[in-house]
Image (cartoon, rainbow over all chains, first blue to last red; front, side, top):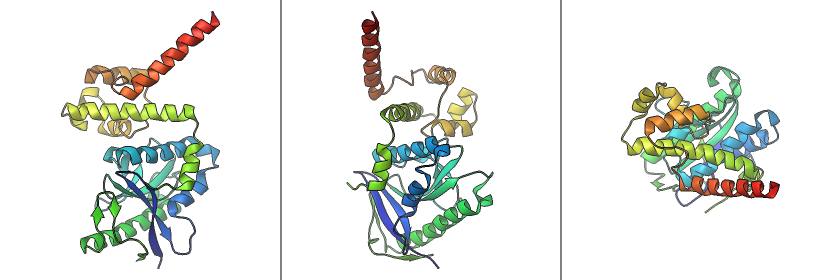
Length: 158
Length: 109
Protein backbone atom coordinates (compact mmCIF):
# COMPACT_ATOMS: atom_id res chain seq x y z
CA UNK A 1 0.00 0.00 0.00
CA UNK A 2 1.36 3.42 -0.98
CA UNK A 3 -0.13 6.77 0.04
CA UNK A 4 0.06 9.55 -2.53
CA UNK A 5 -0.78 13.25 -2.55
CA UNK A 6 -0.89 15.63 -5.51
CA UNK A 7 1.50 18.56 -5.46
CA UNK A 8 1.17 21.61 -7.68
CA UNK A 9 4.43 22.19 -9.54
CA UNK A 10 3.70 25.10 -11.84
CA UNK A 11 0.63 27.06 -12.79
CA UNK A 12 0.15 29.50 -15.65
CA UNK A 13 -3.02 31.30 -16.66
CA UNK A 14 -4.27 28.28 -18.59
CA UNK A 15 -2.25 25.28 -17.49
CA UNK A 16 -1.44 23.52 -14.22
CA UNK A 17 1.36 21.03 -13.83
CA UNK A 18 0.96 18.67 -10.89
CA UNK A 19 3.14 15.84 -9.70
CA UNK A 20 2.47 12.87 -7.47
CA UNK A 21 4.22 12.71 -4.12
CA UNK A 22 4.61 9.54 -2.05
CA UNK A 23 4.02 9.73 1.70
CA UNK A 24 7.17 10.63 3.69
CA UNK A 25 9.02 11.73 0.52
CA UNK A 26 10.28 15.31 0.55
CA UNK A 27 10.29 15.52 -3.22
CA UNK A 28 7.54 14.85 -5.75
CA UNK A 29 8.20 12.27 -8.48
CA UNK A 30 8.95 15.04 -10.99
CA UNK A 31 11.43 16.70 -8.63
CA UNK A 32 13.09 13.30 -8.13
CA UNK A 33 13.35 13.01 -11.93
CA UNK A 34 15.15 16.37 -12.04
CA UNK A 35 17.50 15.43 -9.20
CA UNK A 36 18.29 12.13 -10.91
CA UNK A 37 19.17 13.51 -14.34
CA UNK A 38 20.39 17.07 -13.89
CA UNK A 39 24.03 16.02 -13.78
CA UNK A 40 23.91 13.15 -16.26
CA UNK A 41 25.87 14.40 -19.27
CA UNK A 42 24.97 11.40 -21.42
CA UNK A 43 21.31 12.43 -21.71
CA UNK A 44 21.78 16.16 -21.19
CA UNK A 45 20.15 17.24 -24.44
CA UNK A 46 17.11 14.99 -23.90
CA UNK A 47 16.77 16.35 -20.38
CA UNK A 48 16.89 19.97 -21.53
CA UNK A 49 14.38 19.33 -24.31
CA UNK A 50 11.96 17.72 -21.83
CA UNK A 51 12.20 20.72 -19.47
CA UNK A 52 11.75 23.10 -22.43
CA UNK A 53 8.70 21.10 -23.56
CA UNK A 54 7.15 21.58 -20.12
CA UNK A 55 7.76 25.33 -20.32
CA UNK A 56 6.04 25.37 -23.75
CA UNK A 57 3.13 23.39 -22.31
CA UNK A 58 2.68 26.12 -19.68
CA UNK A 59 2.36 28.63 -22.54
CA UNK A 60 0.35 26.71 -25.16
CA UNK A 61 -1.31 23.84 -23.28
CA UNK A 62 -0.71 20.11 -22.99
CA UNK A 63 -1.41 19.59 -26.68
CA UNK A 64 -2.04 16.01 -27.75
CA UNK A 65 0.61 16.11 -30.47
CA UNK A 66 3.35 16.65 -27.86
CA UNK A 67 2.73 13.29 -26.19
CA UNK A 68 2.84 9.64 -27.12
CA UNK A 69 0.45 7.18 -25.47
CA UNK A 70 2.33 4.74 -23.28
CA UNK A 71 -0.15 2.92 -21.04
CA UNK A 72 -3.39 1.23 -22.07
CA UNK A 73 -6.06 2.60 -24.40
CA UNK A 74 -8.29 3.15 -21.36
CA UNK A 75 -5.93 5.34 -19.34
CA UNK A 76 -4.29 8.76 -19.63
CA UNK A 77 -0.67 7.62 -19.30
CA UNK A 78 1.65 9.13 -21.88
CA UNK A 79 5.25 10.20 -22.31
CA UNK A 80 6.51 13.51 -23.57
CA UNK A 81 7.14 12.88 -27.23
CA UNK A 82 10.20 15.01 -27.77
CA UNK A 83 12.11 12.82 -30.20
CA UNK A 84 14.07 11.67 -27.23
CA UNK A 85 15.69 8.42 -28.15
CA UNK A 86 16.63 7.67 -24.56
CA UNK A 87 14.97 9.68 -21.84
CA UNK A 88 11.28 9.33 -21.01
CA UNK A 89 9.14 11.37 -18.65
CA UNK A 90 5.82 9.72 -17.92
CA UNK A 91 2.71 11.82 -17.35
CA UNK A 92 -1.05 11.71 -17.00
CA UNK A 93 -2.59 14.06 -19.53
CA UNK A 94 -5.93 14.90 -17.94
CA UNK A 95 -6.78 17.67 -20.41
CA UNK A 96 -5.05 20.39 -22.43
CA UNK A 97 -5.06 22.41 -19.21
CA UNK A 98 -4.02 19.81 -16.65
CA UNK A 99 -0.95 17.59 -16.68
CA UNK A 100 0.18 15.32 -13.85
CA UNK A 101 3.88 14.54 -14.11
CA UNK A 102 5.35 11.32 -12.82
CA UNK A 103 8.89 10.01 -12.87
CA UNK A 104 10.91 8.71 -15.78
CA UNK A 105 14.17 7.27 -16.87
CA UNK A 106 16.42 6.14 -19.66
CA UNK A 107 14.70 3.64 -21.91
CA UNK A 108 17.27 1.07 -22.97
CA UNK A 109 14.86 -1.79 -23.70
CA UNK A 110 12.44 -2.12 -26.60
CA UNK A 111 9.41 -1.53 -24.38
CA UNK A 112 9.01 0.01 -20.93
CA UNK A 113 7.52 -3.27 -19.69
CA UNK A 114 10.94 -4.89 -20.01
CA UNK A 115 12.50 -2.34 -17.66
CA UNK A 116 11.51 -2.88 -14.03
CA UNK A 117 12.03 0.75 -13.02
CA UNK A 118 10.14 2.31 -15.95
CA UNK A 119 7.39 -0.29 -15.67
CA UNK A 120 7.01 0.69 -12.00
CA UNK A 121 6.58 4.37 -12.89
CA UNK A 122 3.96 3.60 -15.52
CA UNK A 123 2.11 1.18 -13.20
CA UNK A 124 2.00 3.82 -10.43
CA UNK A 125 0.56 6.38 -12.85
CA UNK A 126 -1.99 3.88 -14.19
CA UNK A 127 -3.13 3.02 -10.66
CA UNK A 128 -3.29 6.69 -9.68
CA UNK A 129 -5.20 7.55 -12.85
CA UNK A 130 -7.76 4.92 -11.94
CA UNK A 131 -8.23 6.37 -8.43
CA UNK A 132 -8.42 9.93 -9.77
CA UNK A 133 -11.01 9.03 -12.41
CA UNK A 134 -13.17 7.37 -9.71
CA UNK A 135 -13.00 10.52 -7.59
CA UNK A 136 -13.87 12.67 -10.61
CA UNK A 137 -16.79 10.39 -11.52
CA UNK A 138 -18.12 10.67 -7.95
CA UNK A 139 -17.75 14.47 -8.12
CA UNK A 140 -15.40 14.37 -5.13
CA UNK A 141 -12.83 16.08 -7.36
CA UNK A 142 -13.97 18.50 -10.03
CA UNK A 143 -11.98 19.81 -12.98
CA UNK A 144 -12.40 23.57 -13.17
CA UNK A 145 -10.50 24.85 -16.21
CA UNK A 146 -6.86 24.31 -15.19
CA UNK A 147 -7.44 23.15 -11.64
CA UNK A 148 -8.40 20.02 -9.78
CA UNK A 149 -10.58 20.98 -6.82
CA UNK A 150 -10.56 19.36 -3.35
CA UNK A 151 -7.09 17.86 -3.64
CA UNK A 152 -5.46 19.85 -0.83
CA UNK A 153 -4.55 17.40 1.91
CA UNK A 154 -6.26 14.54 0.08
CA UNK A 155 -4.45 11.22 0.23
CA UNK A 156 -4.86 8.51 -2.39
CA UNK A 157 -3.99 4.95 -1.46
CA UNK A 158 -2.55 2.80 -4.24
CA UNK B 1 0.69 31.84 -11.10
CA UNK B 2 2.86 29.35 -9.26
CA UNK B 3 6.48 28.40 -9.82
CA UNK B 4 8.63 25.52 -8.68
CA UNK B 5 12.14 26.50 -7.60
CA UNK B 6 13.81 23.24 -8.63
CA UNK B 7 12.22 23.35 -12.11
CA UNK B 8 12.98 27.06 -12.62
CA UNK B 9 16.60 26.65 -11.50
CA UNK B 10 17.09 23.93 -14.12
CA UNK B 11 15.38 25.95 -16.86
CA UNK B 12 17.72 28.85 -16.05
CA UNK B 13 20.72 26.59 -16.72
CA UNK B 14 19.72 26.18 -20.39
CA UNK B 15 21.82 28.64 -22.38
CA UNK B 16 20.28 31.36 -24.57
CA UNK B 17 21.78 29.64 -27.63
CA UNK B 18 20.10 26.33 -26.74
CA UNK B 19 16.81 28.05 -25.91
CA UNK B 20 16.91 29.73 -29.32
CA UNK B 21 17.47 26.34 -30.99
CA UNK B 22 14.60 24.67 -29.10
CA UNK B 23 12.30 27.63 -29.75
CA UNK B 24 12.91 27.37 -33.50
CA UNK B 25 12.27 23.60 -33.46
CA UNK B 26 9.05 24.12 -31.51
CA UNK B 27 7.88 26.95 -33.75
CA UNK B 28 8.43 24.92 -36.92
CA UNK B 29 6.30 22.07 -35.58
CA UNK B 30 3.68 24.55 -34.40
CA UNK B 31 3.61 26.20 -37.83
CA UNK B 32 3.17 22.87 -39.62
CA UNK B 33 0.36 21.92 -37.23
CA UNK B 34 -1.28 25.32 -37.67
CA UNK B 35 -1.13 25.18 -41.49
CA UNK B 36 -2.44 21.62 -41.83
CA UNK B 37 -5.30 22.41 -39.41
CA UNK B 38 -6.06 25.64 -41.26
CA UNK B 39 -6.25 23.67 -44.52
CA UNK B 40 -8.56 21.10 -42.92
CA UNK B 41 -6.01 18.36 -43.60
CA UNK B 42 -5.67 15.32 -41.40
CA UNK B 43 -2.25 13.99 -40.38
CA UNK B 44 -2.99 11.06 -42.69
CA UNK B 45 -3.62 13.40 -45.67
CA UNK B 46 -0.42 15.25 -44.91
CA UNK B 47 1.56 12.01 -44.55
CA UNK B 48 0.24 10.78 -47.90
CA UNK B 49 1.13 14.04 -49.64
CA UNK B 50 4.59 13.98 -48.10
CA UNK B 51 5.10 10.32 -48.94
CA UNK B 52 5.87 9.61 -45.28
CA UNK B 53 4.28 7.46 -42.60
CA UNK B 54 1.85 8.86 -40.03
CA UNK B 55 4.34 7.83 -37.37
CA UNK B 56 6.95 10.12 -38.92
CA UNK B 57 4.47 12.99 -39.07
CA UNK B 58 3.69 12.36 -35.40
CA UNK B 59 7.38 12.72 -34.61
CA UNK B 60 7.58 15.95 -36.64
CA UNK B 61 4.64 17.42 -34.75
CA UNK B 62 6.05 16.27 -31.40
CA UNK B 63 7.63 19.68 -30.98
CA UNK B 64 11.38 19.23 -31.14
CA UNK B 65 12.29 17.45 -34.36
CA UNK B 66 15.60 18.39 -35.91
CA UNK B 67 14.47 18.84 -39.53
CA UNK B 68 16.93 18.69 -42.39
CA UNK B 69 16.90 21.53 -44.92
CA UNK B 70 15.64 19.07 -47.55
CA UNK B 71 12.65 18.13 -45.37
CA UNK B 72 11.89 21.78 -44.63
CA UNK B 73 11.93 22.50 -48.37
CA UNK B 74 9.66 19.50 -49.10
CA UNK B 75 7.15 20.43 -46.38
CA UNK B 76 7.08 24.07 -47.53
CA UNK B 77 6.49 22.87 -51.11
CA UNK B 78 3.64 20.55 -50.14
CA UNK B 79 1.98 23.11 -47.83
CA UNK B 80 2.63 26.00 -50.22
CA UNK B 81 4.04 28.13 -47.40
CA UNK B 82 7.48 28.74 -46.01
CA UNK B 83 7.20 26.94 -42.69
CA UNK B 84 10.11 28.93 -41.28
CA UNK B 85 8.48 32.27 -42.00
CA UNK B 86 4.93 31.90 -40.80
CA UNK B 87 5.61 32.97 -37.26
CA UNK B 88 6.11 36.59 -36.35
CA UNK B 89 8.58 35.68 -33.61
CA UNK B 90 10.78 33.99 -36.19
CA UNK B 91 10.74 37.09 -38.35
CA UNK B 92 11.88 39.14 -35.38
CA UNK B 93 14.67 36.67 -34.64
CA UNK B 94 15.82 36.62 -38.26
CA UNK B 95 15.81 40.41 -38.32
CA UNK B 96 18.13 40.39 -35.31
CA UNK B 97 20.35 37.74 -36.93
CA UNK B 98 20.36 39.65 -40.21
CA UNK B 99 21.30 42.84 -38.37
CA UNK B 100 24.06 41.01 -36.49
CA UNK B 101 25.44 39.51 -39.72
CA UNK B 102 25.35 42.86 -41.47
CA UNK B 103 27.12 44.53 -38.58
CA UNK B 104 29.86 41.87 -38.50
CA UNK B 105 30.43 42.33 -42.29
CA UNK B 106 30.90 46.06 -41.80
CA UNK B 107 33.12 45.50 -38.78
CA UNK B 108 35.39 43.17 -40.82
CA UNK B 109 35.81 45.80 -43.48
